[in-house]
Image 1 (tube, helix red, strand yellow):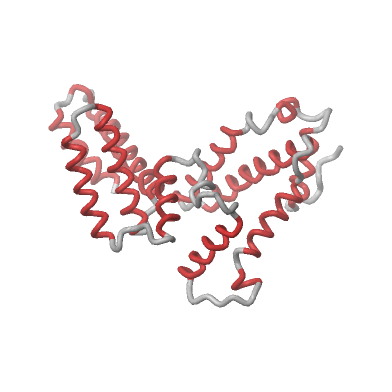
Image 2 (tube, helix red, strand yellow; image 1 turned 135 degrees about the horizontal axis):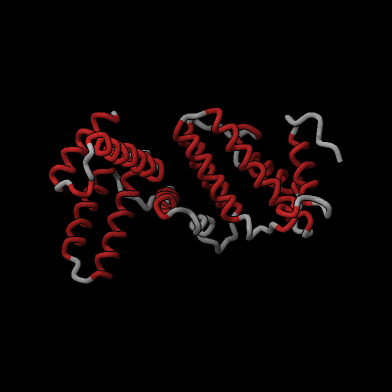
Length: 259
């Protein structure tokens, strides 16, 4: 089989993946399963996030392609097993989008994006089984901070939320006190979890994405610490031999150098 001529068409990707999975296709692609591709799929999602954080459109283009490949590959594996086909994947998401946008594809009127979001949650509720929790569909494999913000966002839609961010900040102070008074390691871990959960609530209320904020904090730390290492190399100094105060002074210098 020759390679597709128009590589800009989605059908070309579908054909390529099918060819790779064919009996005489690529040995690596042929041996893959839904389970074996889990880590690949997760890695591609994180690479897309990194491209978004960096604001690199060329990198985003490439990483979205890698993620799309994973989706088509999973659909091909499912099709071969008689589970479902790619057409069903597309039909399902199209059906959801139309159902959840009655203000576009129907006669419903909305005032703003906030009302759209409220309607979205109500419409999702209609799709759930009568006895299903509104938290049930939140993926348990999500990073803990993101999961925390998502479940808090969902319950807020039914009014289970603080009236204002001030109440949450007061709760944070309360949690800090409980953490300080925790006597056992187990209790400390529990109270620390409550602290993080409350911080997630504050972040949600202030429209701060905790995962993105922490990734950015990690990136700043990485840049500053590697700058400290570079300064030490240039000065012929071993970072580990410096006192804590000297390291802190170098940290402040690195902050200025990397701003």
